[in-house]
Length: 357
Image (cartoon, rainbow, N blue to C red; front, side):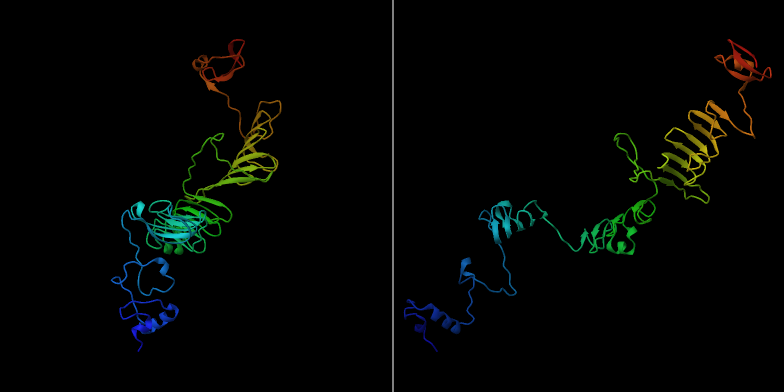
């Protein structure tokens, strides 16, 4: 067994100058399980820690008030600001009520806790995540979710959404289809009908003047037809109603059929047809028309020189009927005419007096 003097110690326990490169390996052989405890070592300089593994133990960062921060860091770090430019810092901030703080990244792409905003996780740059569930995945109905396939929904748990997307109050699928509402009142795009916006239930629009209150529907294709269909579903036989713009002929129709048919029809020339309508040439068997400033009843082409034309083979023109007392109460002017039920005769107002017609 080696003697103590073999390791450079004299009989007075003093160690003289020795070759440490030679002596230290020898010491390790004699004391293979050498350990330092807190009753043997009060302080240990960090530069003495080279590398190694801590097994089933812990490192605790402690802080003494007003004695300074305590932290672990790496890379380029601004210790005073608790930020980094390509680095990280983790620890306790003595100057900020001993708050726990963490910062990793750079000035433009980073993640921090309690640095940018108190009690807040702040992320700068691009966030790539597998799934997002707020506040939980499958417990709270009033929740927000994004799954791994890119579907997003609000107002349903993951299980409820998987059973039927319509269980959510709002969702957008990865196909671009979307839906807002409940089971009876909702609107959707590309769900109920392909490439169409579908509204079910009551629909209210709060309009802002720009330049006037209006709902504007625009068709980008020149001279093309488009329209709005109104449909009632409260009973059998309910008629449809169509508001249609005929692009090629610059005319609008409000009718009971999508093309020709009964309805109210107007073109940009100010012509009106009330009744049957032929879409191709703005004609038909209208019951009331206004054409070129002339009114026609029973005809769609009133005589040009006639302000009013009545045409019928089944009905007659019925003039106004009243008594003499009622007639005399009128503010009469020349050219008036009526049937006097007191005298049983037609009368006209001519040259300032009522006379038999």
